[in-house]
Length: 176
Length: 48
Image (tube, rainbow over all chains, first blue to last red; front, side):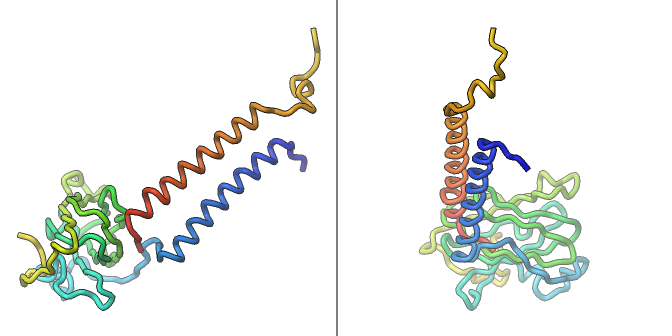
């Protein structure tokens, strides 16, 4: 097949760019452990309130840190809201979110961060990330879930590590 | 009036405009991608 010299050079340049981009992604994925959330764990969405982990008093920021030192947060999505409605987490520390939907498909997205995942009914979504900058972030549903979809949001407050204290209440860290 | 084809007229010469366009596109796209990946995505923290 004849390819014009100029076209071939355009192809080489495009190929070099693709290799550079893919190489950068692979290198950082391996060196920093970056990968798409891939967690398969099933749960009965109709009985979340009866389950041990996603019962109301177990939601929010957990008092005990995980073995690797990360903070665990449990959230339930459903009925056009995330529960608890507000959470407070430390900046610069690994945060492991575990989410379940009580009704239909939802998404969880925190703009201006890398936090984004789907919350599929019948499955537990798990994603680990960190928030380098303190501040207040909205937590939005980014999968259309019904007429109240655009009202489905909560608030995440990220505070500097030195000002953050693990929750001591029996509500698992859910702010009032 | 010349009946020479434009491609033939340029044959043997250096297509400066094409090289400029190629360089602008390649450098611009690469710089933009690298900025978004290393300057925006990675500083927001690891995810997995």
